[in-house]
Structure formats: C-alpha cells, structure tokens
Length: 497
Image 1 (cartoon, rainbow, N blue to C red):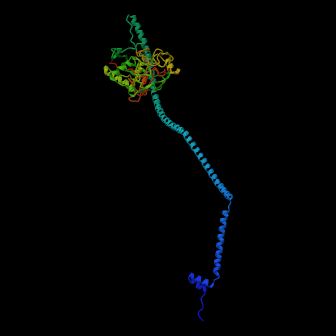
Image 2 (tube, rainbow, N blue to C red):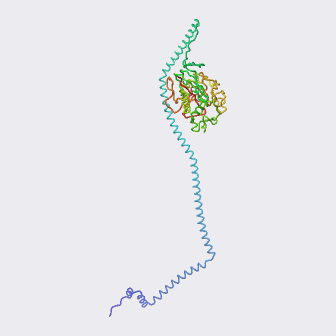
Image 3 (cartoon, rainbow, N blue to C red):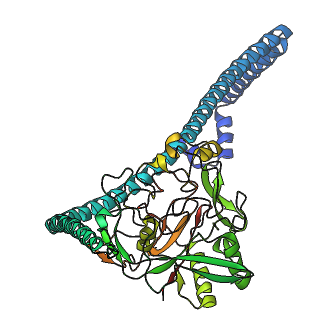
C-alpha cells in the first residue's frame, strides 16, 4: 500500500488562497452557492431598509415639516429669550455698578471739603500749639519778671517813703520861704522867692514852663522857597513815664518808671506838613516806599486795606499843604531828617519815645493833656469823634463823645497847644519815634533810647481815626519800619546847642 493521504485541511492551509478556493470549489461545490446566496440576501435587506427610510422621508407631508420647523423655531425662541434675560440681567448689573460708581463720586466730592477742612484744622491746631508754646515761654518769663519785681518791691517802697519825706520837706521849705518873704516885705525889700520845681509824682500842668537860660525859646529851619519848619524849646527835666495801674484802658507795656531828660532839645511845634515834606522830595527827587511799591494802607469804608497807588501825594481823602503828611514810613521820615540835617547844619532826628512822652505830657500826669476824663477833650485835638462816627459808621464806644469838625486829617495848629507850646500831640496823625519797640527797662532811666535792636518801631499820639483808649499820653503802638498808613506821620527834634 502506498503512503496515506494528508488531511485536506492541511493542504488548504499551506496552499495559496486561489488554490485553496479552487480546491474548496472542487470538493465542496454546494457551499459556494449557499454563501453567495446569503450575502445577496443580507445586502438586499440592507438596501431595502435604506430605501424604506428614504421613502418615509419622501412621504413626509408639508404639515409635518412645518410642525418640525415650528418646534425648532420655538426652541430657538426659548434660547433667544434665555439670552435676552441674561442680557437684561447683565444690563441691570451694569446699571447697579454705575449707580454705585456715581455714589462713590458724590461721596468723594462731599469728602473733599471735609478733607480740606480737616487740613485747615490741622494747621490751626499746629499754630495753636506753637502759640501755646510761646505763651508758656512768656508765662515763664513773666513769672521770672514777677519774682524780680517782688525782689525790687521793698526798695521801691523805701523810695516811696523817701518821696513822701521830700514832699514834706518841700512844703516846709515853701512855708519857710513864705515867712522869709513876709519878713523881707516888712524890711522893705521886694519879695522874689525862688521857684522850686515840684516833685515828679506831684507835677501839675504848667502853663508857662521855665526855659533854660541862654537858649532861644523857638527856632526856625528854612526848607527853601519860603517854607519853614518851626521848633520850640523843651527844657530838661524828670517825669514818670507810663501809666498807673488804675488808668482806664491801660496796657501791660506801660509800666510806670521815673525817666530823666538830661538835656534840653527843640521839638517840632507842629507835625511835618505836606508842604514841608514836598520841599524835601523836590530837592532830592526822593521816592517814598509807598511810591516805589505802588501801594499803601488806606480805608475801604471803615476797614483798613491796601490801596494801590496810595502815597503821600494821593490819599483816599483831600489834603492841603498845611495838613500833616501821611503815608510815610519810618524809613521815609528818617530820610527827611537826614536831608534837613545836611541842609541846616543841625542834628535833626526823630524824638526818642521818652522825649516824645515827656514833651507831650508837658508836666501832666493824667491820661490826656487835659485830664483823665476823655469827655473833656473837646478843642484839644482831632480824633475819632462824632464826625468820624457818622462818616465810618462806628460804634459809640469807638469814638469820643465830642465833635472836632474833621472826619480825616485837620490842618496843623487848629487845636489847643499843650504847656510846652506843641500842637496835635493827641490825634491828627500817629508820630514816629526813634526807638525800637520793647519792654521798658526796670528802674530809673536817664535819656532812655529803647532796645538796641528790634523788628518794630514805635508810634505815639493816636490819630484822627483813633478813640480814647489809644489817644492816651502813655499808649504805645508799634509796626514795621516800612509801614505806611493814611493816619501816620511824624514830627522832628533838634539837639540844642
């Protein structure tokens, strides 16, 4: 027998596909038609399903399509409504945010003035603190001064007792002199008792003060073009400078102390006039500080303000040649004195504060040249009176109760002179003094000239715009040397040979 035949499946596995198919078709001829038939049946079924679906789609009526489209439109509208609501919510949120922003802006606007006010209050508090510190320092200085005064109190009391003793001795001497005079008359001799000067604390108003021997009672300095400046002789003497603590409207810087003017001097009979100052300007082409700066202090109603263009030539009121010059600073007054010194060959200057008060008092110890009652001053000077009250709408307590007839400056020499023959030492215009302003030195003083340095110069005498409190003989005002006003001027002094 031959070799057994290998299984057919093995032969199909190793032969190529075409060969395998040929073998399969050869031995199993019934399988191929069956597989092909199954394939055709499945394919036909799938094609039939697809055709049916297409037919169903083609058989859909217009109403179905319309319903479907409507449903889609409803869905789209729902989505659109939802988007509109979201947009509305976003807009509402935006409006709320805008409103909050506007509120914040308004709050910011209302807070800015408050912030500015707080800054101002902060600065005011800082200034108040500085002022408090200054006051504390002043308080400490005053305490030291009080302690010093207490230390000097006992010597002052002893001096007071000595003064009373001297007064008693004076009275005894006067009685003795009277007896001697009577005895001389009995013997047939003329009675000429010597005149004793009264003690300072008991000085009376002297109608004819004694003049130094060998000096002219008055002199005149020529300014050119027929203009002259008249001065009267002021004798040497002692007086009590300042005011007593009982004087009405007294200020703390008016401490009473004995002062001596050791040498006689000449003082302007009147305040320097417009005509006299004009001669100085004409001769030197001098420009006052008001003219150089283009402004000076003046009046707006009854308030003091800076006035552009105001100067000694141009006031806010009318002035004549014989009116006191004003709107001149301390520096301007000193320039006038230097020019007149050079022209006349004499030493011309401003009075010291002690010279001014000594000459203004002329032997009086009262608040004013006429006494202590301001109501008795009619005819003595030009001050804030009933005319000024009507002109400037002032209060009654700000004016004298009499009328001098002038609302502004008056021509010099229109009112009663004092015992030394000086006019307008009370009122008309403030008068510059040589001194720097400062506290009076303690104790007696001979020819006091004020502090060696300072920032302000002294003005004395009051003016046409001032009331009874500032027109007192002891009142002291002080301002910067370049200050000029429509109520400030000056008068001169000349050293006696």
